[in-house]
Image (cartoon, rainbow, N blue to C red):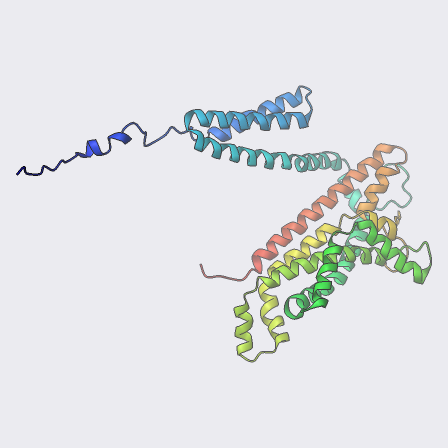
Length: 361
């Protein structure tokens, strides 16, 4: 009887089919993608300085960068890594292309607005000025007063509406309020201006112009933003905090005031600040309701007032002589508006950082 033989295979024979497969693949040098992007940007700037269209240079640079990085990665790293590089390059180019208009606007406004960014522009009005000189002191103060009144009107209404929707709202009424808030979010700003004008014209007659009308028009635009931002922040408050308060026999209204609102305060304040920044540069509703004046008028209940947005529009659309003086004042007013909006955004970030709920590290 033959004895069975056992065949053994060495480790070399076992993994022989895999011996031809490389365990590591090539890799692009570190910084290859950023350096390629830098080279493409420099080439695009050179083409732009030589007379090419800026948009054409940007699109051509994005396509060139994407192709170079993808092909280079496919040759060195393989198809899988090349696909990853392709998607990364497309996202990067899309971000940079979206950033170009913002950079262009900022550079243009700063370069043209600095011509009148002086002390006279912030301390004088246009009373008695027909040519060069003058300033936008009356427009700056008018903007702050009208926007402040709009904030005083909008924040309580918006916050209380959001509290109702989150904490109390049930059934058809809550759904109707949510629907109308969504509709108000998308209405054109001129409609808000016409609404405020029609409302005051019923009581004071046609042709009325007052600062409070502009505040009402801006509040129509602010309220849905405040409602939406406050509603989302209140929804982020954990239900466990409410239940813990109820377990201690704390009434619901006191739970909202002492627990829910302080927890969501940072997000609510940020949303309110961004809502102010959203309406502070509106022109159409203020043009209809407030108008423009060349003198100081800081009483929102008596006559026309000046605002920065309308001041810039009027200076650019109806220049006098010399026209350059009016254009310079328009660009300076636009620069002041951008600075105010930037400061408001920085305040929003600061509030969010200071009042955010403290967590253990």
